Length: 609
Image 1: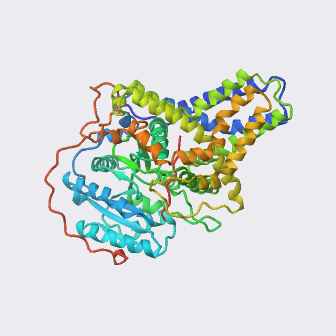
Image 2: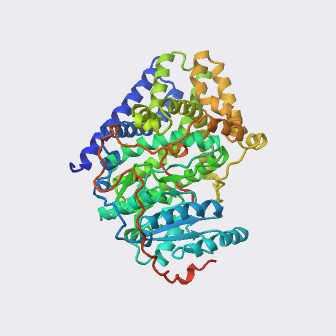
Image 3: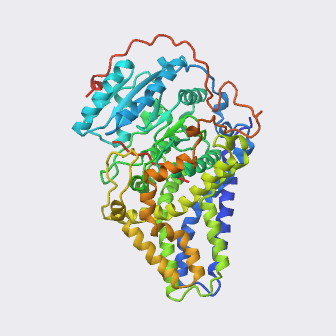
């Protein structure tokens, strides 16, 4: 395998991003320059110009990722060399499995953990793992229900431990660090799981093997896909998200190399360096860092440890919000956390690439008010008589180019599946996959402007004390009433109607260009209600629309199209089932730490393409 060259790869990638950004700006200037630029058009140019780096970065990641997915015999090993050196079989090291809880329905949390522990035992590796249930539950009734559910689980799994903090200082990051400081002893690694995480034994063993293969690795973050969903909203959302993340993560891993992401769960971390370098202090105003994961990644990178991404989907899942209201609230939590990064750029020891990663996280959310402002300025410009000389066909081309770049990761992921027949078969075939992609793209075009408007409103209110709240997440499917949707989304609807009326008063072409961005606002209430409606959800399931390989029960095929594509030596990249081995008798349970007798959940924030 040829050695990696960080300088060369990043230089080439930077040139690609610059070329794409220049193309987008040239197309926009060609649309705005005829007749000269008014003050409002200068402002429009500034808004779109500030969003262009993100759009170009998205497209560049997608293009690089698509090439690797289509051409590399083993795409994951192509961007994670340690995977090729990973050895199969029970690991030599001991790993802690840390599950963070906060007011969770334990009937949904414990069964996947039981399956995981039994699977590890069947692989002959059960004695190499220690499960810790780390609770930040505060509500007395929830505490009682949690204790009652966990007690028989602990009896069935003597090596598992349950610890509940009386104060959730530092939220999830504090919960994990408390466990590392007070409970973990001989464990070399720890694997973080959220309450809704599901990982297979083979995926867990693969992560441990990768860490053992490269002593420089501080974190390995596996790609995470959505668990099979019954409700329409998560079903459609995660179908597109999955395609986008596959291409995005593969392309990003190619140029980031040892400076990869950490998304807070479904990842493995080395205990010693994390304990030493990743303790998060309070911000100057006394508040705690909410989006802790990227800061922890940057801290380890600054200390010389490698952080890598494993862009493989198999065996790593999570649940997505069951309806639009939960999604918007989650986005607000992530946005509040990402905006805190503004205070972290001057921290000592921060690397240039670490600052770039923080800036990328900020841009993900700052783009929302910029897009909204550009739309408002365009309406104002037209109403004030500006834009009369704007060539509409050229403007349409500029908008289309920006749209293609913005959604390039998802489009690249769709293209990969349609090109590679073996991958398409895991989705029920090319025709079935194409139907799901088409429905998802319509959903996205309605949903994305609504999501951006909600982020813009929240970020505008954030300096004035708006808080995302520290509440347990609803993970259960539920309907949304028309009244609830109207109370929540009437501002979005009014803004959409006003903007549509403004563009309609200008010309039919202006209205045609604006509708893709205002239709979702006008339809916010019915979109919210219908995507949570059990009847629509049942129809999608019955027709297999947006079905995933896990739902269909098909084996995943994420390597190259050729059936003869080689795998990494000694370790199956796609974690195919292996014959069960006779497990040794479990070791005697260790005496628990004095504070671990039975007695907040921070939603992870990640970069969404």
